[in-house]
Image 1 (tube, one colour):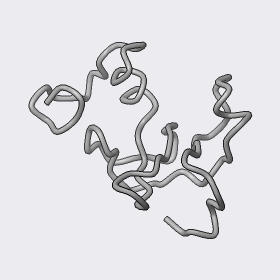
Image 2: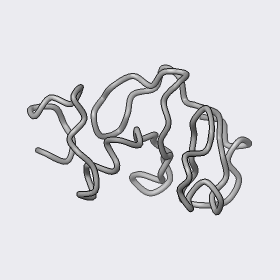
Image 3: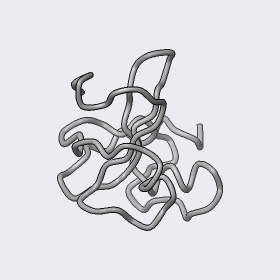
Length: 91
């Protein structure tokens, strides 16, 4: 992920279009990190995925798929692609 795409902040969003969340209005949109793994599930991000990029481990920016994030905070179902023995919120 290129630093010049982000600018200041601790959270950014990505996706083909906004999804109606306040994060899409208050945080900067960045390019979809196609080919990078989701921090929580390891699933490779495609050009149609949506999610968040968060600062992780002090200064490293890591993408998280939206459905994984929602599940991790208890407001969405477990994504069908997520295996319980994968690294992530279940372990």
